[in-house]
Figure 1 (tube, rainbow, N blue to C red):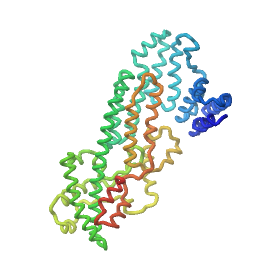
Figure 2: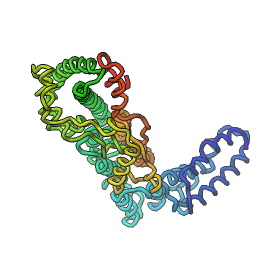
Figure 3: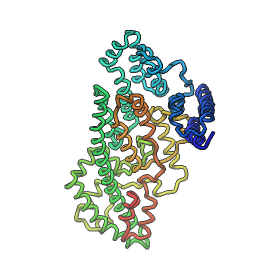
Figure 4: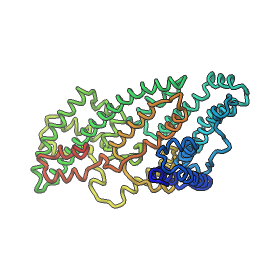
Length: 459
C-alpha cells in the first residue's frame, strides 16, 4: 500500500487493538484488517481514502468495531445478519423490519454497557414490527409514543443517575452541575427540545462553573490562613532560632484573616454560621484531597478542626486579646495538622487509595469499562483544578443534547461522557503542606501567606 493508505492504517486500524480484543471481536477485527489491506492495495495512488472506505462499506464496519473495542464487547461480531437497507439500490420503501435494522445496529454498539432503562427503551422500539407491518403506521407509533426519543433520554437519565450515585451529594462541585443539566433531559418531548434544553443547560453550566471556582478558592484561602496562624503559633510555643519570624507571621496573619473574614461575611454572605450549615464549606475547611475521579472519597484533616477553626476565629483572631495572652493560654480545642504534613510515612497514600478503591468497588461509575486489574492498578491522587476542569467538560457534553438527524451519534456521545470526564491528570492536589512548611522555615516573616497560597493556586 502507498504512503497515504499506510498512514491511515497506522493511525486508525491499529486503534482497534488498543483494548486487547479477544474472542469473536478479535476475529472480526482481523477480518476487517484483511479487507482494509486488500482495498488499500487495490486503490494505491487514490488519495480519497475516506471516499473509498465509505463506498466499500469499510467505514461503517470500522465505526462499529471501534465502538465494540472501546466498550470491550469481546462477544461482538460484525453484524452481517443485520443488513443496512440501501434506498438507492432497492428503489422502494423499506419494510418495518428493515427500517428498524438501523437502530438495531446502534443498539448492538451500546448494548455491552447499556443500562436497564436503555435496554427497555430499545426493546419497546423493536416491538413495533410485531404491532404493524405498515411502515407509515409504524412511524406514527414511534413518533406518538416517542420511542426513538426515549432511547436517547433513557441514556441521559441513567447517565445522571449513574453519575450522582458515584458523586458525593455534599460536594457541590460534582453534584450540582449534573442536577442542573442532565436530569432535565428526562422532561424533553422531542430531539429538537433536547437540543434547545442543551443550550439552556450550557448557560447554567457556565454559571455553576464560575460559582464553584469562587467557592472553592475562597474556602481554600480561608483555610490556608487559619492553618498558617496555627502553624506559626505552634512554632512560637516550641521556641527555636526562628521564633521571632514566626511571631511576626502571627501578627500579619491575624490582620489578613480579619480582613478576609470581613470580605467573606459582609461582601460574599459567607459567615461562619453559613459555613457550619453547608457541608461543602465544612469539607473545604478540612483541606480535602480527592482519592477518586469524583472526590467521592476524600482524605481530610481531623473533623474537630471545624470547631477549632471557629474557636480560633472568634476567641483569638477577631478579639482584642494580646499575643502574649493567646500564647500563654491553653487552646481549648486543638487544631490537628495532617499526618502526611508532619511525618514522612512510606506507603501512607497507598493505604488511603486502597481504602477508597474498596469503598468504590461496587459502584458502576468507577468500574465501567475497567478490568479488575486496571481498577486495582489505579493509584493516583486527583487534583481540585482537574476536577473543576472535568466537571466543566461533563457539563458541556451533557448540554450538547440530541440531534434528530444524528441519533446514533447522540447515543454514542452521551454514553461516552462518563469515560471522558475521568481523564484526570496526575497533578498535585491542594494538600501541599510540606512545600508550605519549607517556605515558612526559609522566610517566615515575609513569605508565609504568599508561599502558602502559591502552593494552592499555582501562582
